[in-house]
Image (tube, rainbow, N blue to C red; front, side, top):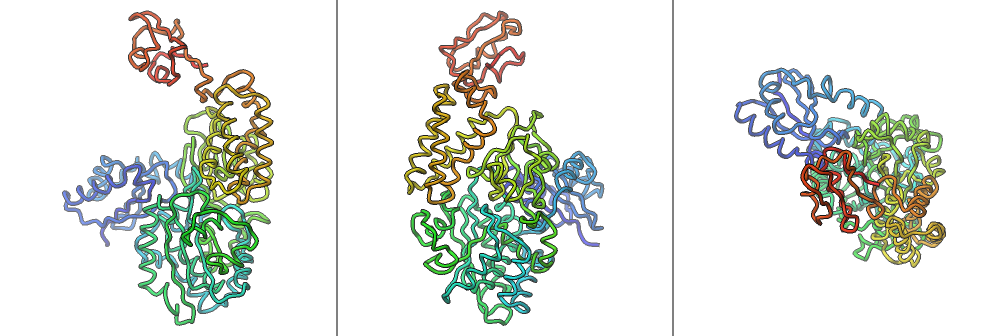
Amino acid sequence: MSRPEIIIGMASCGVAAGAQETHETFVEKLEAANADAKLSLSGCIGTCFIEPVVKVVGADGEEWTYGEVTPERAEKIVEQHVVGGEPVVEWTFEEGEYAEDVQAFLGNQVRIVMRNCGLINPEDIDEYLARDGYQAIEKVVTEMTPGGAIEEITASGLRGRGGAGFPTGLKWKFAREAPGDTKYMICNADEGDPGAFMNRTVLESDPHSMLEGMIIAGYAIGAQQGFIYCRAEYPLAIKRLEIALSQARERGFLGENLFGSDFSFDIEIRKGAGAFVCGEETALMASIEGKRGMPRLRPPYPTTSGLFGKPTVINNVNTLTNIAWIILNGAEAFSQYGTEKSKGTKVFSLAGKVARGGSAEVPMGTTLGEIVHDIGGGSFTGAPIKAVQLGGPSGGCVPASLFDTRVDYEELTKTGAIVGSGGMVIMDDGTCMVDIARFFLNFTQDESCGKCTYCRVGTRRMLDILTQICSGEGTMADIETLEILSEKIKDTALCALGGTAPNPVLTTLRYFRDEYVTHVEEGACHAKVCKPLLTFSIDPEKCTGCGACLRACSVRAITGEKKEPHEIDPDLCIKCGVCYETCTFDAVDVM
């Protein structure tokens, strides 16, 4: 019998939830109990909503997975399970308080990209090798021609998972056929959409899968050098990529004459400074070249003239992580999932007011309702879901009434949204859609590189108008101006960031126009989000005169005698909402 093993989920979500403190507790308690147990780590299995996650593998091989493992819970797990041999069943995924949620979240998924996430130690190449790691690149180099590899990926129907959905095999074919001896392979890991963390999950949990896909792509297009462009705000992802690269070189999966062939390939990491525009491929290449990250006109396209003027292929993390699986399992196995034009699976990050937030991988063609309700569990507030924002600031807001829409490239485009890289921000009835449009436009305006006049000035003007509407100073003419500016920006912007920047505004106007009209004509925000439009008052029938709100008010806008109803002076009130949050008698009304 082997000794027990404790595996702690140590991706960013787990660390943020306290996994480091949990790890320290396990170290301390195992030492105090003189317990002979192995302590290891894994990445994220996707269940971010119940981190830190800890798996205990008993000496007999029986596995139990625990959720929300605080230091206090870790202490009991050591005492009762590791030492005593009895699982603390009530905290487990298998039979405890998390069983129903975990089954609903994981049971409706099909995992190809995330096949190893949360199941292996991302810092140990041997655990990747034990799950067929690097067998695909060996097969490609020793048994297939570059053209054969391209044909297999083409037959699978894999489309780019970065947002545009361009056929991956076709992109590789263009680069392979482009003249020139020097070609480059780039992994775009510059994930910048608010609410998106799919790429980070994979890089922190299974970096070798992406690297293997990247090496295969390099072989297929005839490149000898690859670059991973990853934002510096992902320090853990970069650390694990560096470890994985070092291990791959040591084992002969990177470097000269791979598997005794004449194919040589190596990879460098280039850190981005967090500019959202550098997610656009021509701006990304400019950044790698040491220039300011600004997009350029196309054509020529990168497959013809890309990095340093050489033919270049750029694929994102999730695209590349599919490659090894397709090579080993075959194009037909991949294409059995999805729709006629959108094959395979797609990873989405569920964020916002969703009950079960995390990373989920589903077949293309799954409906929005199935993802948001069946997997995500609806809203954590208990309020009805109002909409979901897809594709980040370049996407759009889709109302709950359209949740029977299939998630694929063609169907989502009809709603005004896009699949994008995979971020989903879920909103409930307490969300103001005008304020949401303002939030996303503020992001894109701030991230505009400034090269195009309409993107630079037009988004600024749109943001000003949205701010006026949220402040009760808008007019009906402003709504018309928003639509005009949106179309102008879409028609004249040079890159996808500018061309899609108006999407949140256009979709909220399309589906939630009544909220704009209410803001303008009634000077009201029914979601009670836009503070300039709110009025705070105290109901004398409910107020007990306890004085809690009076003491909490920093501007002394509340007056009243003890045990007598209090009042709010509207001229002094700054609408901070502290009185509403403080009152335990529901006496503060917000209109």
